[in-house]
Amino acid sequence: MLIIDGAYGEGGGQIIRTALALAALLTQPVRIDHIRAGRKNPGLAAQHLTAVQAAALICDASVTGAKLGSIQLTFEPQCPPLAGLYEFDVAQVRIGGSAGAATLVLQTVLLPLACAGEASTVTVKGGTHVTWSPPFHYFRDVYLPALAGLGIEAATALSAWGWYPAGSGAITVDITGGWALSKQGLPDQRSGFDLGVSRGPLKQITGAAIAADLPAHIAQRMCNRALNLLQQADLAATIEPQRVRSQSPGAGIFLLAEYETSRAGFSALGRKGKPSEVVAEEAVEALLAFHHTEAVVDPYLADQLILPLALAGFSGELRAERLSRHTLTNIWVVEQFLGPVADVDHRRQLIRFNASHRNT
Image 1 (cartoon, rainbow, N blue to C red):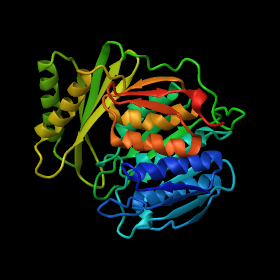
Image 2: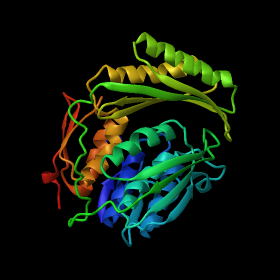
Image 3: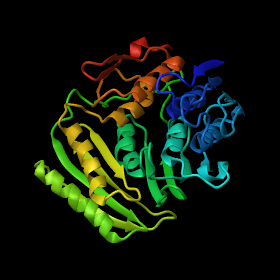
Image 4: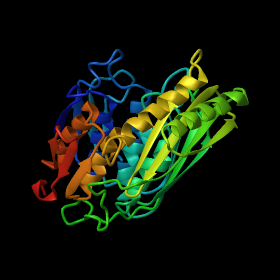
């Protein structure tokens, strides 16, 4: 059984998700110790426990320690990932419900199910636009298109918006399956995937300003402020103000920057007492900071691409806006399963993948 230190590096929930995905994909028993040990509330939270349950179901895993607050988990897959029709609800694992991030649960099972022999449909209920997680817009417009470049076919839809504290949102993903495996049990490298050393010129900026169960002027104010700031930076944009319904009131703005070879996403969420204009300013400032670098991917996509690029046997460079502790920790987790997959150049914010270094 492979032993993973859940307190290593950044020490957060990504260690759990990456380890579960690889364990399910490789049918590799794993034990995770010291889960989220450095957090204010250590151990498994609702979204992590849901991810454990989801990963266990797709590979019929034997699991111990799968309970809220658990700081140790053993996960023993009994079979390769099984295609199917799945539904998971973060709110069901905790009394009083939870707005735990649906997108993070989806990240745990998407790659294993992409390698299953047939198509799958996964619906996750929970928070769709909550802090410390990729919102649905980022998942749909940045993460899935990047996976498509590796040959992973998946389409997603939002059927209900979920904000803190009620959650109650729902995201469905249709996964084609059949991501071919090599003789070593890992996906063959995909031809044609090339982030390049340059992202190329900016093609367009689009976005959405959302007010959920709040007055429409909130969305309009976020939209207007973002457009004004981008115009001051000589950047044209198309941003749509939207008023939607949800179980909890919420607000946020989501911006997508499309370049010749890559996409980057930026968002900010509102909260009680936070002016709409400040929400817009946060998202625009993040976009401009990225735009004024030579980075090809934003720091969040860099983190989320570590596992699929390693599995695909990718050889090449990934130029990030910055190499976060989260990203470095994720590389470490992947290498516990696969052996050396990447070298890091901190000075140039580069991750160099070399498939020839990987254990077979």
